[in-house]
Image (cartoon, rainbow, N blue to C red; front, top):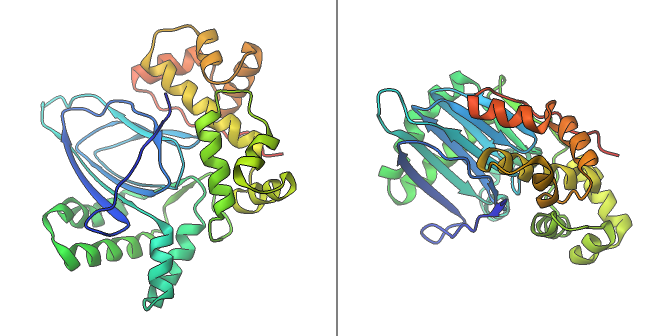
Length: 292
């Protein structure tokens, strides 16, 4: 199941820091309205963000945009040592409020964050240079922890070798109507969802919703719905032994032939090949369906 993760405030602020130490990272596809900056140390495996699925190495740093399905997956290390993850979750509207009420220096950061469509994978050199600061953030307290976060976020903008997933978009303040639409789609993608129904949930007209998809996501309702369904199908293929027809039905595809076409358009593979390659630890990179 594609899980909507609920993130609480940390120490009264609209951001949260989670430090994890584990023997392995299970595949757990989920989403939330916050940005997520994740540093992974000491692991090798597969990373999925939005329509992108790729292999990651020992020191990996990636930023997930709001409401994008994502998961990391890695087995136990050969030397049996633990894997370490440092996860920072924050909301763009919190940073925008800071910029508008006494901290104008972070406006360029807000504009850069607003331009991210699905996520960013940072270069190995950037990951290495910020790893020490990020890895020790949980040891800091109060203002020192906050200023370290802002320093790290500011540095991310200057990684010229970073890879933007699905390309860079035009900077824009996220629209609440679009957020409501995406939340409704994420909750009901497995049903026969219609554009009219989503527009009603978003409290806007169909024409307005189409414009919001086009201008703020450079996408369309049908494309985003397919992407959510295929992301859920990927999780079912990895986490279960059920047949492809069952996976298709659980993901909102009553017609298996349509599921096969959409799945191959997104991943470049058949569902069976995707399942096999995922379990062998081979990377598969999604290819987005062209928005209409």
